[in-house]
Length: 494
Image (cartoon, rainbow, N blue to C red; front, side, top):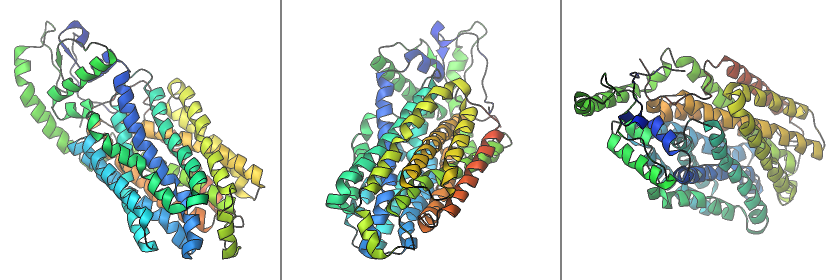
């Protein structure tokens, strides 16, 4: 784990002198306060999951209606991922510089607006532009992860992060069910409009959620952080430790254990200096410092590989279900898209994420993040392998179900690991850039899955997905840190 500047102290917060944020979070525990945070962060992930899942249905529906080629169909997904690439980095920088909530506000405005208006797209070009902006808004998804993580006490942190990840699965299942109900009767425009509702709700409820106290502490805004913690203690019916809340990197005690008057008097200036130092160290170049460069590069490829394979499996499901290929006539495509098998298969494979979450919850805090990722990677590779050759419909659905179960679970563990390994002043930026790199995989996978992943051209894309999964597994082995049971760190010691 990266080291941080921390001054040893002899008296803890529960003895009435001073306390850190981690001590405060442990004191108030996990209760109603965190449930509110969980619900809002989960809403953000439901919104992202629904907007991404609808790509499985909209492209195949629009292709025969507007007479699109396979490359034009795949571009609908690609532009959304391109927007997410830009958004992931941008919202990360905004959140680390101006606060997590500023990112939520901007993202919700863009996603809900562009998502709703895309339902009224008069032509292909306008749809691409609007879906690009939806992608920019969706790029804020990783900030919800970092924000929720910063409210969770250390004990069972992994389990609670898996619970949070359940909202993504809920979103994918909701979208599959919504498409099953809406698409055959009302068409793709209604699906686009209704899928923007969660983003609108995130905008409506924006004012009821707090800023991250951990972020506020890194900015020297300890009074605001304490106020939020007091509200959290009140909600959870707990008591904060008595004394002064101090940042880990400025905490000092006098020899007798009391917080000295001089220390108290210097807190303001120390905070300002710490804040200035943190702003400088928040540069993306800090991600390439000797203590982080190996982790950063490996995480980039892990995000790329997981995004590429996860969305590739989703898009393969829709392509193999409707039997769309260059071998078939366009007339058959319009007929196949009305076939309920597309919605049934996507819905069934979406359910695969539930047992994947269960497995992750069981082993994450027991065996650690790295071993969990290795187990998921190997299992996903084995279950996807038979699809290198054509299988019947039942076996195809079975293998896609199994592969998605483990690949989605692996992706979840990666999304938990990455925020844990970066310090607070780099967390949203570091995870944001990794997520942005991952979106490049999302931009490429529609070309592979849609362009070649048909019933008569499935071998090559599956081989490419398998190679990517293997390389991702190698990256996991090479990761230098295990974050199980470790405290979140605030500032990198440079």
